[in-house]
Amino acid sequence: MLLGNKIGMTQIYNEKGELIPVTVIEAGPCFVTQVKEASIQLGFGAQKKINKPKAGHLKELKLKHLKEFKVKNPADYKVGQEIKVDIFKPGDEIAVSGTSIGKGTMGTVRRYHFHRGPMSHGSKSHRLPGSIGAGTTPGRVEKGTRMSGRMGNVRVTQKGRKVIKIDLEKNLLLVSGSVPGPGSNLVEIYKS
Image (cartoon, rainbow, N blue to C red; front, side, top):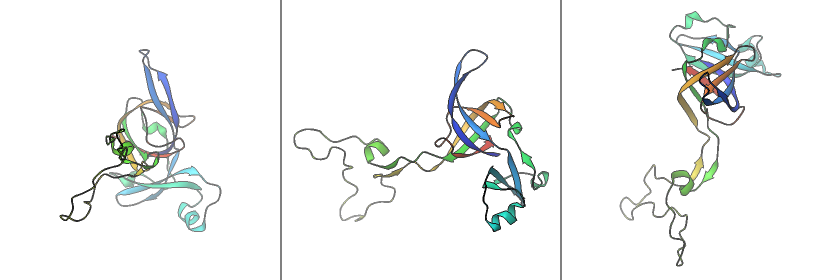
């Protein structure tokens, strides 16, 4: 497990000459800030100003993001221990979690791929959702009815991503395919 910032996407060639789309993630260095019974807390990202409660918790480290991860043996970790990208190797399968790009309020055609209504002969229901329920029974709109609303900006996990390349000097991780969220989005990286 590791925390990182998504930098963006690019493409590279492998040994066979095949073009592979990759996402570049600045992963770590992360520091263990707390060890609990079944989990550890990791901190990532430098922060200039820090409030007193956080400063007392983090001792001398000034970290921006804190995240707790469940581990099998928490006793293997010590407070202040540094975790870098070298815990992964090229070819490892990983899962990446993050917040997807928010798209704002969307209608049913864009959000759920509803068909539009007729466009001619005086029809006034081009992109309207249509009926949302029966009349007297049940006399209400059922929960989970697909309607217009906010799209995106939810937690997403992409599984089965492969580590293509690692840059230890710059703490970069090149992962096959796309990863949730916009550039500079905070992501969590797990071994699958």
